[in-house]
Image (cartoon, rainbow, N blue to C red):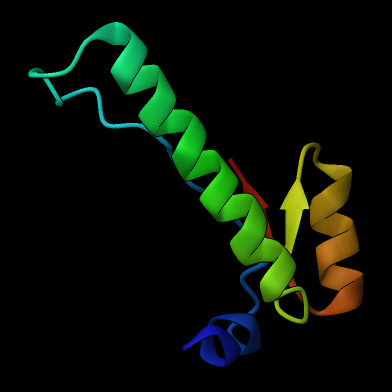
Length: 74
């Protein structure tokens, strides 16, 4: 599916880590869960670097376009 997304011209997405609706967890547990999700995304982006790059600024969208990848903002 990523090939189709790239072929359509999409070059950036934003993902949200952490689930604020986990009401049965403490603030610390929710924070830890969000950190674990961010680490998961970091590892996934590295494993699939032929498709994705981690984005931290709008310049990364231009870089993704130039490299034929999808920029992911976490």
